[in-house]
Amino acid sequence: MNSRKISVQTRDLTKRFGRFTAVNRVSLQVYEGEIFGFLGANGAGKTTLIRMLTGLLKPSEGEGFVAGYDIWRQAEAIKRHIGYMSQRFSLYEDLTAEENLTFYGGIYGLNRRDIENRKRELFAHVGLQPFANQMTRDLPLGFKQRLALACALLHDPPIVFLDEPTSGVDPRARRNFWNLIYQTAQLGKTVFVTTHFMDEAEYCHRVGIMHMGKIIALGAPGRLKQKYRKSTMQDVFIELHRLSEEQA
Amino acid sequence: MKTSWHRIIAIARKEFLHILHDPRSLVVIFILPTFQLIMFGYALDMEIKNVDLAVLDYSRSPISQRLIQTFDGSPFFRVRHFTGSPAELETVFLQRKARAVLMIHSDFARDVQRRPATPVQIIVDAVDPNAATLIRSYCLQVINEFNRRYGGESRLPFDVEKAIWFNPDLKSAYFFVPGLLALILIMLCALLTSVTITREKEMGTLEQILVSPVQAREIIVGKVIPYILISMIIGALILSIGIFLFGVPFEGSYTLLVLFSFIYIITALSIGLMISTVAHTQQVALMMAQMATLLPTIILSGFIFPISSMPAPLQWLSNIVPAKYYLKIVRGIMLKGNTFDQLLEPAGVLLLMALVLFFIARRRFSLHL
Image (tube, rainbow over all chains, first blue to last red; front, top):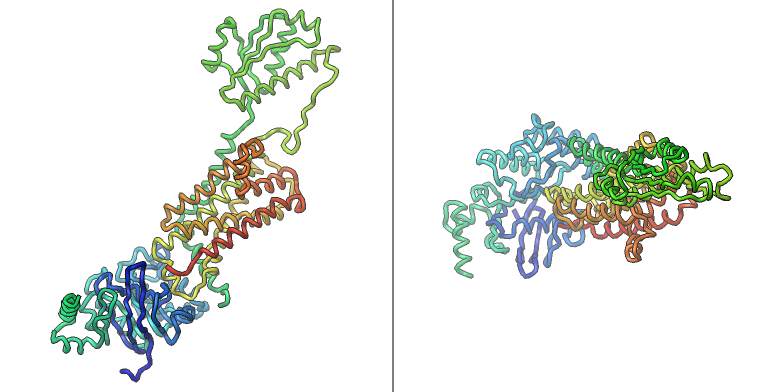
């Protein structure tokens, strides 16, 4: 796997808010076409890390490269090469599904014909055709999340960041969404996804487990289970927490 | 990176969709100013007609009768005869039976024959001082009229003729239509701009825009374009109501007014932008926009209270109220037919304000969360 091209790379990336260190010297590499799961409890620093990688937050220290561009100096170039789905649903509830896509197509600089083509492709990809003209606020949460994914993929970015994309929906909708993530990865895109559902960790090619701003384990789910001699990622996670608390 | 009109148009288009999808906002945006204007139009009517005038005629002579008829014949007064004693006069005012009293003393007929200047007494209820001043001047008008008709040779050697220019009929519509234009434009622009941006913060939608390659200046321009258009339409609406319903004249150039209104609107939008960089919720933005525009415009712009009669510190403060300059411009263009070079001073100050405010707002508007 290491022979593949690197999509996201960080070295000692750190973010402090006042005296609180939200992300503490995180170093990781994510490869092209990989589904990289970022696990951790709420408040572990996952969202802060994603926000630094997407250019929403300035890091305090450390290095980061996304799609080969430096997060310190090339934020503009990064923005054109990434898709982002925020933890909180952040599309316009008072526009229709289609109007939302058209708007994002516009701000990503797609021309009218491209927007129409992409809309058709993406509605098919995420299974939203019947809802294209519905007000976004009237869609069930599961469909809103698919719409958000469609928006993130609209400009065909090589990397997508999904921040807790499945929080708040039922297990079946979560399963459906993960099928979409797989299909997205099969298109050759790198998927950087955070979650606190450990069953979802099993679906990832590799995971990083974050605790109190630090990465405490990194690797393929199978290897981690082997290493800590547990049968599920859930147990690995609990074991890791126990170990890091013993250390502290 | 280059500014992209493509992205600006996408943002402006989306802003229009928000408005179109929410008909209630359209109602508020268009019906409210219309309603306010018509309300002000009828409520703020400074002209007084048919004032009840109580008359105490102790002279009971043909000449006093003629004086009373002259009062009754004018559109300003309705004569109510009063038969009580002078001591009971107070009850006339207490019971609001009349707002003014005309007292003609018993020797009136004899004195008029003898002396050229014979006094009659007029008492005015000054609970409303503005009205009292007006009533007093109406009384003088009627008495002048009486002298002209019946005075004969005993007229004064000269007359004081009042000449009032630019609003010869002292119509209040002439002064509140420009005032309301200034008030509604600044309030609505500041409010709509600040709310549209804080709404995106509050709903989390700004985050999604900020991860796109869009630039701060594109967001700002895209977001204010719809509101510039809406403000222009509302301005036109207010003007038409003023001209067609209240008969306000328009002496100057429309192009000139549109040009200067545009500068004024930029000032208002910049105030809105600045508020949006501070406020985190729509509620707070709304309150701040109202505070920054409503009171200063009503009190310190010269809209209702003349700036020249304010205490010095308030006069000084009025210099930073954009509406003060806009009001000079609008009144100048509408009532006096001022030309471009006659308005250079207020227009220059307004332009400077627009530029400074926009620059500050632009600096403060950041693309980070």
